[in-house]
Length: 134
Image 1 (tube, rainbow, N blue to C red):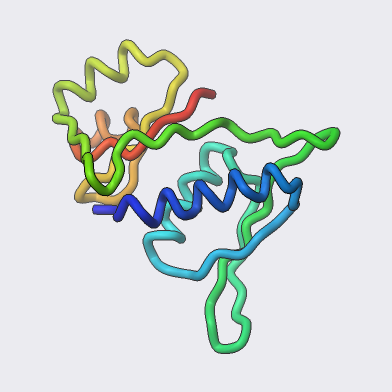
Image 2 (tube, rainbow, N blue to C red; image 1 turned 90 degrees about the vertical axis):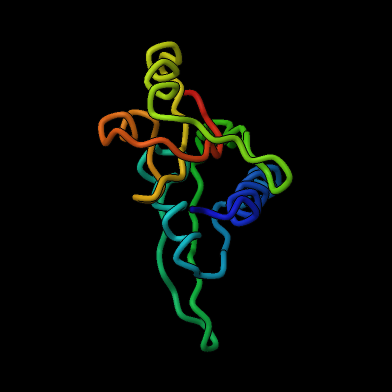
């Protein structure tokens, strides 16, 4: 399962760099950070990422979308946090997927980080990390 503070850390960095209009920034490499960044790339929340090694540390360079000085990035709403973790069963997730329309929910399952549609296809429930609209 994914730790909530890793995700909130990356989302805060994205929001800070969007506000400062920085095109790219660096995050320390960890497997969980890497998996979350891959998921953000899959849904076009970020433009690109690269793995770099600098001073014996591994980093992930994240590039954001900008068009005419505005970010082309969907707002990600964090649902679970460190003090409150919201879990969802497969049957509830099936109902949520039907009612949510174009919203994508990120679910941390035993098989990794999945969207709500992928989790329903694999018949898995898990922890709802957050959502964004497409």
